[in-house]
Amino acid sequence: MTRKLVLAGAVALAVGGLSAGIAIAAGAGGDDGDSPLTGSVLDRATVAALAHTRGGTVVEAEIGDGGAAYSVEVSLGDGSVVEVGLDSSFDVVGQERDDDGRSDHGDDAGDAD
Image (cartoon, rainbow, N blue to C red; front, side, top):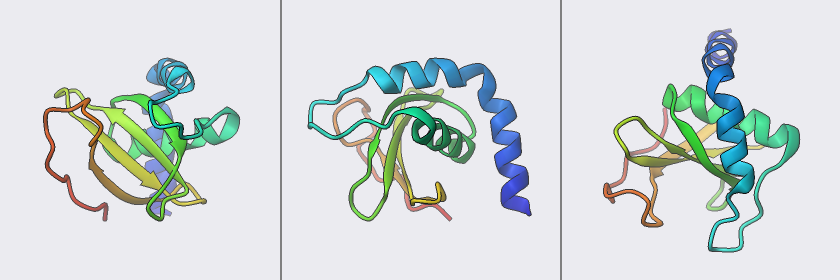
């Protein structure tokens, strides 16, 4: 029940920034050849990642790796970028600082939950 309430709140929070985040994520092909997320999968992954980070802007969303079905990179208000790993049900399975040079914060942010 709590997860549903958090997700519902995230949807309300994300409505304003969702369109911009989706546009950025859809346009980000990445340098590493990973497959970008599209359509409803992109929508659901964006909402889940922004709910987890409590805001920010999605800069890339793609098929996951390292045990995650989906990987969503979120730029936070402090300028750092985190990568949120989601399972196939869009539940968070981990979070770490972005490691592809977009962030000056190379240290690990730790696992979710």
